[in-house]
Structure formats: C-alpha cells, structure tokens
Length: 411
Image (tube, rainbow, N blue to C red; front, side, top):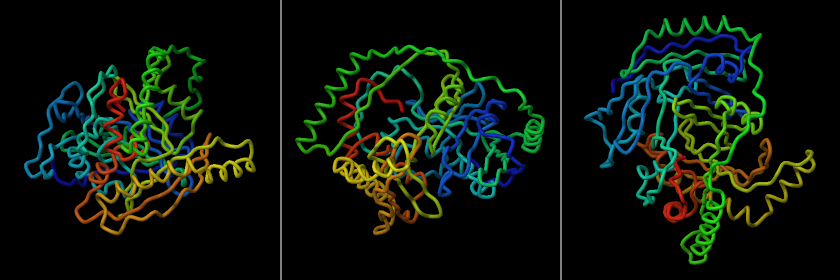
C-alpha cells in the first residue's frame, strides 16, 4: 500500500462568500459532509469532496479498487495482521489512511475517503448470525470514495481550506489540480443559481399492506421474546420505497432545510446516491479519548421556550424513556469496554435533554481510553452497528430481528 507520504498540499482563502451546498452544486462535488449545529465545538467544520481519486468496495467477492471504468482486487499486504480474521474493507481503508496520517495540519480530512458500511457489515465485526434475505436495492456491502481534492469550511473563522492528497494507488499533479481549483473558486459567479425545483410528485411502490402485516407480526414476536427473557429491547425496521423524478442533490437541499441536523451527508456513487440527516455519530476518537453519545427518549419541540422546558422535565421523568435510554448507555459501556483499558470507561453525561430542530432528546455520553495497540478501526468494529438500530443484548437482538424482517437491510 505504500508508506507515509509527505506531499500533501494545503492552501487557505476567505470563505465568507461560499456555503458548502452552493459550492458543491457549482463544482459538481462527489460528497458533502456538513452540520446545521455549531455548538460546543463539535460541529465546526463542513467538507466537500471535489476530485475523486478512486473507490474502495466490499462485496461478497472481497475488496476491490475502482479507478474510472477499471476494477481490480485489493492486494493484501504481506505484513497485515488481522488476528485470524479475513481482511476486509476496514483493513484496506486503514492502509490508505496511513499514507496521509497527520496531513492537512490538523484539519478533519477523511484520509480514507467518504462512504458507508451497510448493516450487514456487522458479520465482519462480530460473530453474529444474520439471516440472508432478498435485496432489491443491490448496493455493495460497503463503499468509499477516496479524494484527491477536498474543501474544508471552518465556520468559526469563515475560512475555506483546499487540501490535496495523493496515494500509491493513484497519483496526480497536486500542484496543478490545486491551482486549477483555486482559479475555479475565484471565477465562480454566484449571481445566478437555478431556482429550487417546484413540488415534484412521488409514488410509493412498496407493498404497504404486506409490510404492515409483516411488521406487526414481528412486533408481537419481539414482545414474546422480551417476556421470555431473551431480549430487553429490539429495533425492527420497515423498508419504504418510492419513485420520483426529483434530482438527488435537490432532495438533499430539501432535507437539510426541513430537518437541519448535526450530521448531514450526500454521497454520489454514480449509479446510486446516499443522503441523510442524523443527530448522532456512531463513535468518536479524539485526543486519545473514545466516546459514544447514546440518544434515546423523545419529545416534540415546544411552541416557545417555556413549553420546551416543561417538555424536557416531562421527558426526563418518563420511566419508559429512561429505561430505554439506560439500556443504550449500558450498550455503549459494553462496546467501549471491548477495546478500552480496564476501568477507563465512565459515563460523563447522563440523560440530559438536548434540543434539536424538531424534537428534544435525552443524551448521555460514555467515554473511555483505548487500550494499548487498539486503533480507531478496532473501535469502529466494537461499536458497529449502533444500539439504536439493533437492540439489547445487541447480538441476540440482531439475530432475532434478522429472522423477522422481510428484506435485507442494506443500510
């Protein structure tokens, strides 16, 4: 995979006339990561991927690299240690990231790219029996776009940073690419932006009646498992499919407007687009501290600040919401405990109400110090998937849910 490089390029310029979305639209960006919340220093930056280098893909056949129209299998390094586990895309991404470790002067650059791990990736993270189901979506198990050029927005200083990275797998003239991008930025004309599209009709194509019957039967089965002591809670899902002529980027614009969230994402893989909004991250490692922020327990936002306070008190006192939340806190402690030093895992914030755009949630924070030799990739394996999409106990909940759902989850 090649050793650590030192040829990255970082340049900065005033960014007050740009926004991540309008700039991404003008430049035809492949990916957008942004936040509608800049509080407490957690969501200071937004990022767009402008120039694709290559892709990394995981499917049943293994890990492959995709460069343009060409694809080839990943050549696993001879010295890669996986403790008897079959190497997968996380190992490949770790090798890619190592090439530019510490680059960009501390800016939050995704040195291994921007992408996703599908729900079924859990099979590679833990010993869990997930039933095979039909998958009408047909996307890979995991896929990442690795970029040559990224633009990072610092919302505190109104500064725009252009970051160029090269890789052993694909190299370009970074100086020329960076200079070209800076020129495009200087020449951009924002006097005209296409008006947002009018309302675009859509049509539900899922079999809603069959889905509802199957879902309600699954809920009853889960109740039986809880009564029998097999489960504490489980998260059963339903797939909703719709047809629409709405452009994906316009769909993302409408989503970020309707549901501004701490974590907003848009990733264009060409044959499909992944977009969404979430109040929570799966797991974080910063300054040697690993953390998970369980979010569970919900009330609507009030009509004014006084009603918000009343609803927060009601939420914090609700025994059902507290019980559900405590289960997720225990899951977070267990997940971190798998990779953190003994005795280091502590709850640093417990069931505090936080206000989001449309709802109020109970939020806790669990922290720990990773044990010697444990990497961010070990941390991700230990926490994947989130307790909010699985249940407790996590492994048994996933196994039972997989038997009850009609389709492969994909995401």
